[in-house]
Figure 1: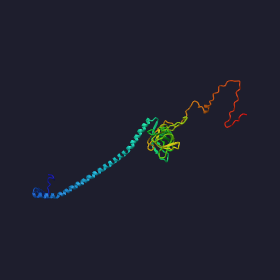
Figure 2: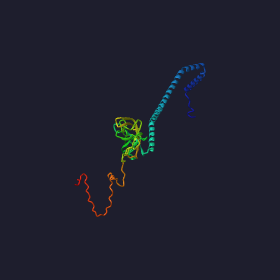
Figure 3: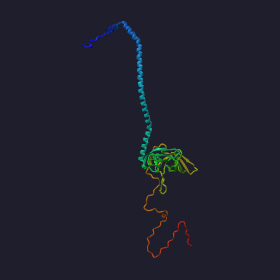
Figure 4: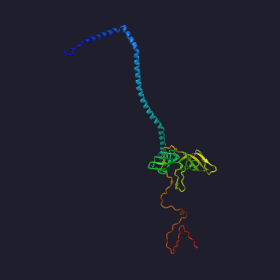
Length: 335
């Protein structure tokens, strides 16, 4: 026999166990009585408000906790949506600029392909259109791209913008046509009235020294004349037929032999972004080409001197040559 089989519970524990068993059996038997049911119902009736309050409190606390959890989640989602909304707003704000840039690039590319000249496309990177300094723009093309001093700049529509004032390796400064120091010879497209055009304060152009007998009217277009000076040695700095602008005001005095007109530039000189540089037009003084023989002087063309025939032996002595007077000295007449 091991130690566990010989173990016996103390007598006091058996007594407690018996009492509890007796009490349990008694309560089981008494639970079906009317008195116990009445007491149980009364206790339940009294405890129902407490139980409801406890349940409501638990539900309220659980609801608050769920609400706080959802609020934190909603706050995170709201912050994410706010950032996405800000990104969409920025992209939406950039869309007009991107669309305008694409539209301008399409126009300038088509103008390059259809131009009668050999232009290259340039982007305006700096703009100075104040009346304090010369009105200029800086383009991102220079000597490395074939840009040279004096080349003419036009926009996508073929309107005159200006001329290259200075050029570096990768950029160039363009003097705008509406600067006061820029001078263009222009003519009214219909009547052919010719005048000198230069810039004014405010960005407009003044067409002056137009004959009073020529007809000028508002709305008429003014283009470059591309005049060639007599003799063909001097060409206009601007090729002919470039649109300068439109007449918006005519000033004519019956007592004057000339009239003037205010011209609105056709090119958007204040907001232009893309331009064309005409690289195959050379204006100004033409460079004379090499020739096989020197050109005759005006005096020789008027009084050509025939070539002397070859000398033949003759018994007659040649005439004594007459001395040629030294320039600046007067030879007295023979007596």
